[in-house]
Length: 127
Image (cartoon, rainbow, N blue to C red; front, side):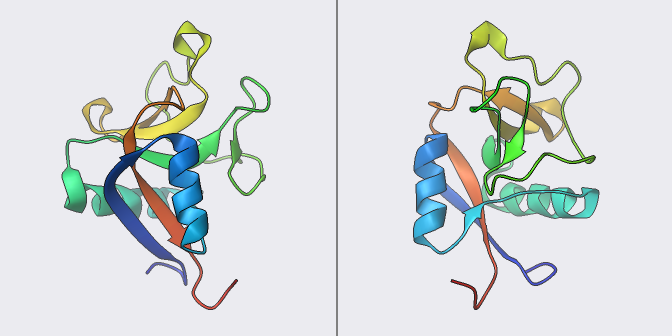
């Protein structure tokens, strides 16, 4: 738990939408690292599950290319942790954000259909 929010890293692999549905079923959303401290915490959390595997976070630009938003519909904001040259929408199919260990734990945009591990967040006691 961090700042009243519970986080859970899943070792199972799902597409971005499958991961989002799993989080929703558990009463939460995909994790939304909106500041450097939360981002660092989530990196340590996913490394405790699998330090070499990429993980989905709750950020995408599926509605409008280049306009990233969190899964709760809010704007990206001022904090980002993109790897150099990212997001780049490689081959025109990269709309979902992922932590990538071999990019020094920075964010990358990837195809939403990739099967990846993921991190969920939920606030205890909230529906």
